Amino acid sequence: METLTYEILGWLFLAGLLGGFVDSIAGGGGLISVPALLATGMTPVQALATNKAQAMFGSFTATLTYARQGHVNLRDMKWAIFFTFTGSASGTLLVQYLASDVLTQIIPFLLIGAALYFLFGPKIGEVDRHHYLEKFPFYMIFGLSLGFYDGFFGPGTGSLWALAFVSVLGFNMLKATAHTKVVNFTSNFSSFLFFAFAGYVLWVPALVMAAGQLLGARLGAKTAIKHGTRVIKPLLVSVSLVITAKLVYDDPDNVIHQLVLSVVNA
Image 1 (tube, rainbow, N blue to C red):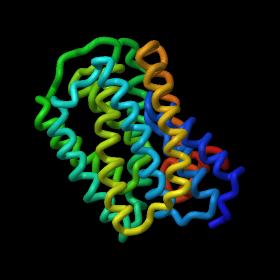
Image 2: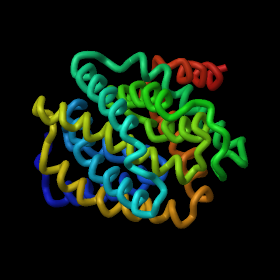
Image 3: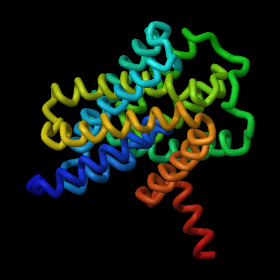
């Protein structure tokens, strides 16, 4: 790992600030923070662990901001917190021993589906709609699965949660974003605990980025509350597509990557 000069720490602070801003609105802040951490010379596991440490400050700040404005009731989220914590803990323990190759094949398709869902449903997320599951089974299914995914791999978790809240529980976009931050903080905190216990968290860069996260997340949440769907929807679609592009580009064996190459070379 490179020596952490003041210049490097300054860039990490900016990465934390921008990541916190984007993440508090549409998720995907890890797309900014993880590459920044890897650029310092950390191992992938150290970067993932340190990212969880700094990201939980941003998701906690965003959660408080949304809760104080009445967009989420934390007492109603107790089962969501329980199942997400359990799922994230399981994923975090497993990722220390297994590769995430299978997920890199599947997740791009899910994110493309999420982007198309929000993009071509002009009224989706503007108002609350009919729900297809009661909250307890919803939180059990998605808390365990998406919590596990966030602890094991992570990219696009916020987009997938927002998609679930809107399409299954029928939440409007702002309400879905607010509830997403609660489960994001839960999975970040759970993952952080297990990474920290295993000694993977690097504290100096984590705390510097956390300072940026606190500021960025507060600004992002206030922006989302003020502008609602007009900001959340396009940013959510953009983040989903950017994460998909990065995952596909980084994995030459991905089905989509191979398909694009075959078209280009045709």
